[in-house]
Image (cartoon, rainbow, N blue to C red; front, side, top):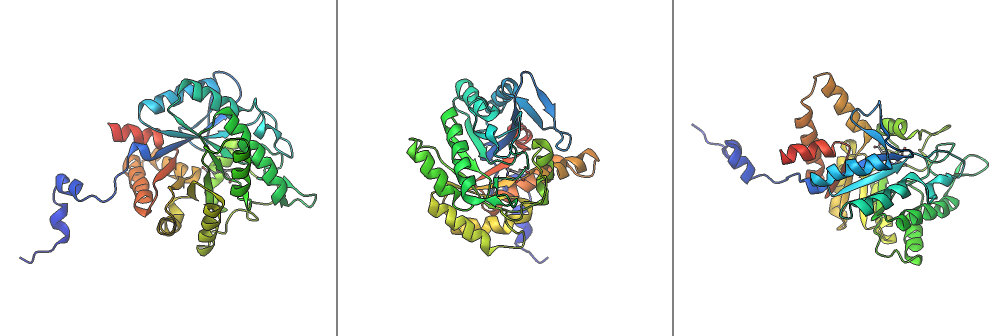
Length: 323
Ligand code: PBG
């Protein structure tokens, strides 16, 4: 009989474990959560089965469970009470993200609290910045507002600031604003290569942040471009980004691999809302083995080069990894 090498090392689970090149760990996971005002609120998000909008009190309780299963970090998105053209509530001390940061740092000091810095959830027009009279997003006016938002998060106790707006030069602007206010120890996790993706659909439902006119293609990246992502990443690192993110995940694994080869800062993959909801929908139909599919997807992000994975599957994955 001819002997081949391939299957010799796949014969038993012990052998497979010994030669495994990539392993997913609970410490790799960051859980994105939506926070809103009120008390005792846990509102299901229809397009994201298993995900909720939380009031601060119940968010803290849920985060206690996350800490107990070993999840190191959450990423917070705020749902405002009122929206206006400049997204005032995004930087308000009484805003739900600011309140959540303070409450989480009090109750769970070891949990790493990351905050999304953007305006689209807070603006009445649903764009990620301040509009000119012509209806275009004004880059530098937006930078000023983003700096106010980032500062309000840092002041409330955020451990990491994560800008997702895709304005030019925002990392330099936020770094300067944080340093000026003595937050030089607050790292920035940059959504460096963020594509204009239809996979954000369920998120926009959850956050009520779909643009009221037009789309985000004027500031988010064209899905066809690869070299441009490397320019965006290089610019953000030069401006002082501490973490680099590629978003979305599955359709952009080549970008993640390119980024891994290019940078030596921690690299983050965002397994976005649409990717989550596709798996949930197929699993609900009984068409996919959810657990195996999710583990395969997340292992793929790590194999491609991610150090950390933002995923709505985080609590389930933690229970599988611990179980
Ligand atoms: C805000 C923001 C979005 C997401 C993260 N931050 C939506 C968007 O850009 O429209 C998407 C996250 C997801 O789909 O899970 N700019």
